[in-house]
Length: 204
Image (tube, one colour):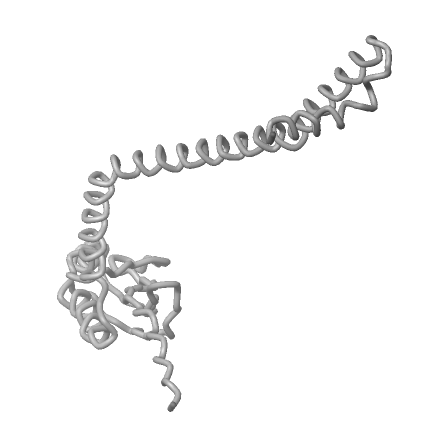
């Protein structure tokens, strides 16, 4: 009885087209089929294709990220070696820069290099520091008299100092066997970055 009722309900749906001619029945069925196909394409197949395309793009993006990370991981040992080498070079460079407390001793070393070479200082004038990003220049104007050989000895002694000192802007005037030399000696010191003050936690 249940099957009979189901068959009757299906027949009730088809009842409006039963009196129609055969070609109209076929056309109605074809139109219904096309509507069902169009509905499936619009509501089912097209959204599914959009979702597939989105997933494919996501997969391609993840594959590129994975390939890049694999390259970075493969290059990591070399990067670690380079970092260790640069860190060592930085340590050596910083060890050649005097601390602020060492500047007076270093300047005294410059004058000692001059007097030991036989030069006579008439001017030795420390100038204000010039701050850069991670270091500060400490310049000193000087004027000396002596022979050319004594000047070369002075420059050699300054170059052998354990800290970096550049002698620049030399101005030489001859007076017989004596030279009047004016110039500038510049040393450098490392400027430590300022520590940010810790924020006090409010009382609860």
